[in-house]
View: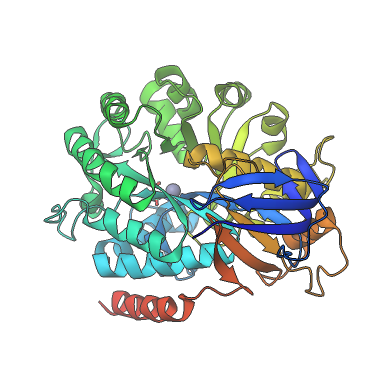
Length: 468
Ligand code: NGQ
Ligand code: ZN
């Protein structure tokens, strides 16, 4: 039986901090009650510190964890002017080299390690934007769902909630530019994608995962395919989430303008029924009108601050978007960093550096900037994940974190100050005592029961990949 209860002096509910909170959850791992102002009897377990809702990670390419940290050297993309220096595009060339060597076993080892790291860092669900579908020659595996199943297994082993987003990838650039040889593992036509979705639906149901679709980008999916793929997805599940990379690089915006005369976010809003089911990953480069329309659409802006910094993408201009009520959440994307707190901190710091101000994303309702960031990112991440993970409310999954109130960094602080310190002034994850998904304790005293074994398999897999 999986039902349980936990009392905490402080808990961050969707509407804000509450005191003396008793959570109870049922045998299926859903919250059955959230009561405040409670005086618990002695038999009720007490949390060692404030409780936070678990953070959904809205954007992950799990395999990229396998070479995180290994592209931080000078390398110029073919065709690039060496004087221009390294760029997103030269990084991508290195990333493709790694993707070409990946085996199913390596993917499972890397993803298992990564998902354990995510849990230890405060993420309780992940949206996996999965595009390495085929073998190294670009031929489908005997079972087309091979690589997808490895990701589902990794998520189950770690105990993280999963939204699986198989990626549709067809072209190397706007205007039907033929795919490059080093993109061969990613390619499917819309019929093959429809079949993949139909095959994956029962697997996802069996693993308790949500299935969606990710047309990779406007660069990689021509308009007709985009429309047909969304129709195919809706035949499988009319409410399924749709994620797309949209405007990460200035070159992408320029190429889109050259192709159709309008910018990528504008093109998408003009041609597709963008609503709450959509997540626009890296909506970095938007003009005022795009920003206003995206905020009004209900779609989620998928922001990946540490990856966007690492790849030199640009800064998402957050203050006006948030002022318009735009939905957003965070993803660890390339996994240069895996930490919910660090993504939020980096997001706020990008604004501070740009505007030469402090606490840019605090609001009248949430003067503590960490409260605002955490609650917004849970709400937007939940919409992107399309699972019941909207925080500490009845009917939602019992996905939550317990801060370590006994740690010197947090000792003696109330809930709001403890969260602010966790986000802005803790070193790594040592201020996280416990992480639960569906009520089950996955991380205790910062440790996951599988971490030693998973770490060993990860290191072995990476050594083999680098040797080949
Ligand atoms: C990806 N990653 O699909 O892994 C992309 C790079 C591309 C990021 N955009 C490839 N961070 O966009 O073409
Ligand atoms: Zn991505």
